[in-house]
Amino acid sequence: MNDDKDFSENENTEVQPKSKGKAIFDELFSWVTTIVFALALAWFITQFIIVNAKIPSSSMENTVMKGDRLVANRLSYLFSDPERFDIVVFKFPDNEDLYYIKRIIGLPGEKVEIRDGKVYINDSDTPLDDSFIAEPMIPEEDMVYQVPEGSYFMLGDNRNNSADSRRWNNKFVKKEKILGKAIFKYFPGFEILTDK
Image 1 (cartoon, rainbow, N blue to C red):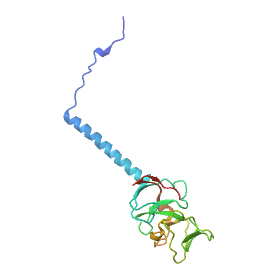
Image 2: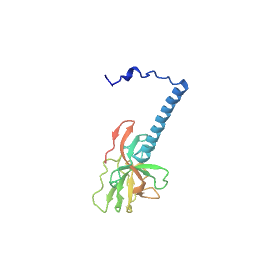
Image 3: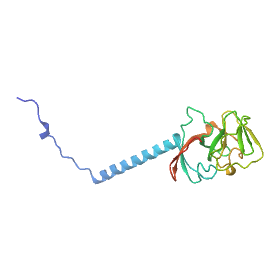
Image 4: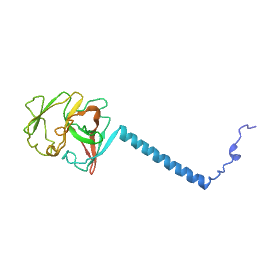
């Protein structure tokens, strides 16, 4: 005698159809759940991982052009400090509701001197590399800045047309106000933003 039973013959395999209203509700709920999850994920990424920015001016030309869209990494300085020539997005020191993008030139504790259209650090006789600027800087009256600890001195790459540390009331950007390091442009074309 075989005690094993084949239940497949006795099982009810008929599936009861869902009501039309229940099917529509389930489909709608699925779409709403997906959209809410996508929006929450996008919010999290833009608040804690990246800065998505559109460039409003020509102050960083020719590195970043007016109208370009770029992504900055909010995690870049989690375990390291910003470096000279990094391109960063930060809260504008004179109005923190605005975001600016500039290049770091002066580091914490450094003396930055601008004379004859060139930038010198800590009384060096050799000016900083400026091969990335749009055009030679028009010489102005000599300027000297002492960068406070924990702060940075910023210049635009289009130095003859840039509202940067030279022009602001609050001349320096504190580290905690730097939102992220610019890593690539994605519109109108894709381009990695290098350190220099």
